[in-house]
Amino acid sequence: MIRLAIAEDHQSLIDGIKIFLEYEDDIKVVGEANDGERLLEIVRSKKPDIVLTDIRMPKTDGIAATREIKKEFPNCKVIAFSMFEQEEAVSQMTQAGADGYIMKNSSLKVVLAAIRAVMKGETFFDDSIKAATPKKDEGDVPLSKREKEIVNLVGQGKTSQEIADLLFIGKTTVDTHRKNILKKLSLHGKSELLRYSMERKYDF
Picture 1 (cartoon, rainbow, N blue to C red):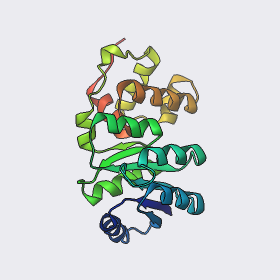
Picture 2 (cartoon, rainbow, N blue to C red):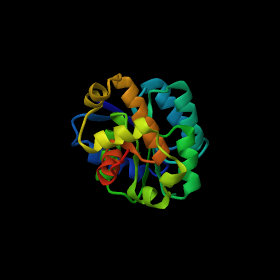
Picture 3 (cartoon, rainbow, N blue to C red):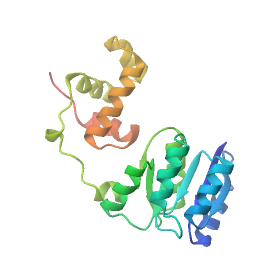
Picture 4 (cartoon, helix red, strand yellow):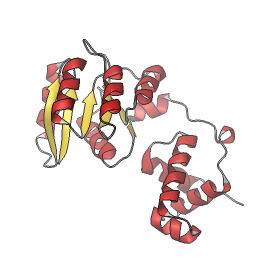
């Protein structure tokens, strides 16, 4: 069961999300807040798995709340839920530790997809955010030979364990390389890495 807390200063938005999620058997809303201070109280008492939070809220904003949540509960996932898609706002939330960022004008299906993605340990960014945030040029962030090998194998549909066996390295090492590749190429999650690896094959 995914335990979810929602922080949003417009109660109608919270109510709409709760109604939509009532049909999901594996998600339970354990708390709701209309300001950042109340959100922190809920997180401390209810210990949710995921927090869906607005950025601009009374008393304590979502950025400060996210920073505090990640400090006290590093395993708690945080998804920003905002009207602002400017790069600065996205950067502030990701630096605070947010695992995802979605827009308030997104469909509720996107909200659900974000919840499920971050619960699996992935990051999730709204399509409009990814379009607005320019990706680093590959020439500026060259991959190592090992990282290129892993990209090629991911493109072949290999799992981390299969890649580890083929390259005679540990699975944790492969996972570390994959995280570094995502960071270097400004990709978000397994799906983007797979798409990239299928479009690009490295030659040695």
